Image (cartoon, rainbow, N blue to C red; front, side, top):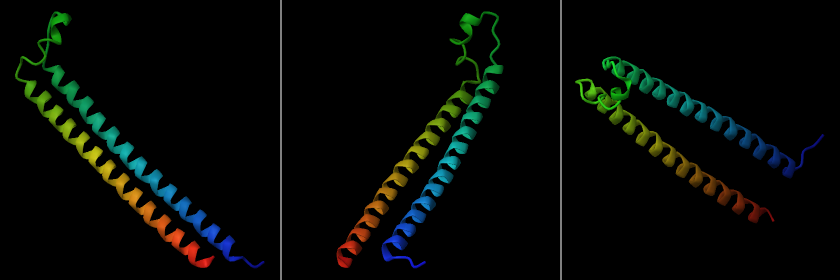
Length: 118
């Protein structure tokens, strides 16, 4: 069976879409794992720092949480969480822009290729 140029081009384009979809799934899985890891670290640091605050009255426990010397750990955890959030956000924005530019370039190349064939 002989393939036509259109059917070959369609198969190539379909394969490219499947490869890009697989790469996107891998990137999403890596970002999800990193997010889960950071969330686990934050939960662990919360448990570690709140263990040092012992109070008989649970109503005053949360208000007095930042009074002891363990408050530095909360501040450190907050700064690290903020920095991690900013970093992940910037990486996602840059990646999205890069993907959009690549998509525009690919469409421009495909568009010019179709114009010359017609």
